[in-house]
Image 1 (cartoon, rainbow, N blue to C red):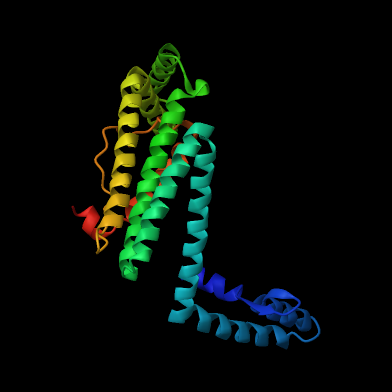
Image 2 (image 1 turned 90 degrees about the vertical axis):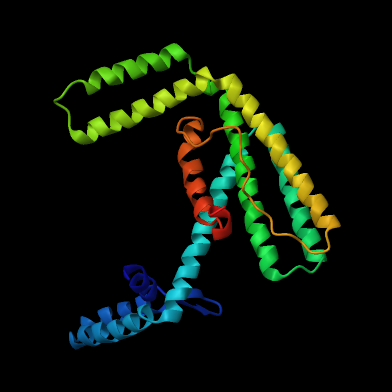
Length: 273
């Protein structure tokens, strides 16, 4: 409820020549200034603001407006994260991803030309967005596995793990510190495992990318040939395991956040299949 109250207090109105003005903030400021001359204005201002803010905050239509605004802001943040991940790629990989995106747009263009139902196009757009995210994640993983700055030696990781495990055997440490060190050990062990099977992981990633490209080519052909556009599924069984921590380096947090976002947005018919 606090977010609705806060939004109601800072709600703005567009005024020609002045831009968007926070009406309640200005009103409260005005009552505050007048209160120095007559304290009664403070009481009147508090009563007026409470009525206005509460009326907006508990209004279902205003609450939906706030939810929509926050959704757009979150969506913008997610798009920024995706764009930042894309920019970390080498030019060759960025070009590869752009070509994949272009094919996704071609599928939607064909569906639009066939005058598919709006809900079908929206559903397929969401599915294609998840396919694009999976493809981008594969490319980001490949980038980190082949990047020179991420080529840490096995011996250095083994030493770090050994030192942390030695620290954990000391009992006079706060629980929060022990949990942090334990989490770090788990990540380092995953990184060590990734290094030890790096060649195999790269082969799996390349195979998955080729599979997704072939899947998208098939979608383009099906969209062109079939009279009634089918519903696209974003579920593709990948050979590579990109769920564990450590493979994405400094991009781990952004990848984890976007993974949660796209998983939560997946339609019921896909999550239950």
